[in-house]
Amino acid sequence: MNSPASPQNERRRHERYQLLSGLAHGPVAVMSVPGWVVNTPLLNWSYGGTQMAASSVVAKLSPGTEIAGTLHLSLASRLAQDVRFHVVATTENTISCSFIHDNPDALLFMRPWMECLRRGAALTELAKGAVKPELWAAGWRVWRGDGPLTLSARNMDSTDPDWRIVFQVGEEYAEVGSTNGKTFTRRSLDNDGFTSPRMQSSDEHEVSLLNTAVMLLAGASSGAVPAILRVKLVDQLRAGI
Image (cartoon, rainbow, N blue to C red; front, top):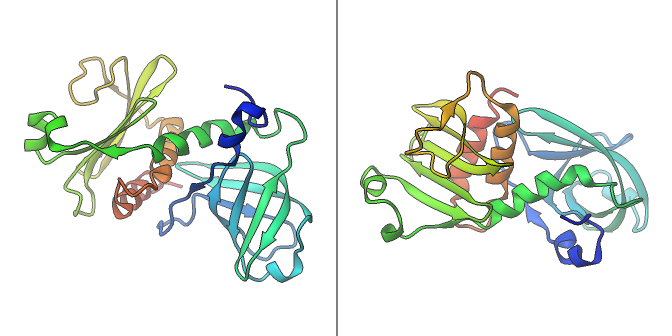
């Protein structure tokens, strides 16, 4: 992949992804800035910039102001990265910003998260005829995206639905999900978490896989995956933070 600032990636650089709200443990991404009383949640995010929800500090900002802050991700673990950005515009309760790209590698830390959001946004639900009959009969609904990426869920109205998301990690496939309220992580050589004899459960939860699953689900904002389901799944994955 080329660097975020390269001309051929200009469209992707400015493609904004809406972030999931209504989570039990708060937003998945917030910005902290010295002098700001509270952290500001990110409403959307791209390589090029972000829009944040803010109120008390808006009146003090003007377009072009340069700000140094720290981007905090609250996934299944907590991550932080120092960033700098310019204020582009403000409304009564939002701040639109563009990240400062000092060099081609300045925002490389964003690459895996942007890719997760992009892949999640591409999820679409399979029609009944495209789902394996035995899965459909067992009540599973299935969504597919590129990457490849597969999300399956059943008992969606329950507090703890059964679900799994399968995605590629290097040369392997990984699976994250929950059965009877118990979260698991697995790795495999097959893109099928239901039938793979080589899919092995981890002795311990792999935090990197849990983090990836959170961002894939956070990015599925096209409406294909119900928001109430995504909130339940992300809340499960973030229960330990």
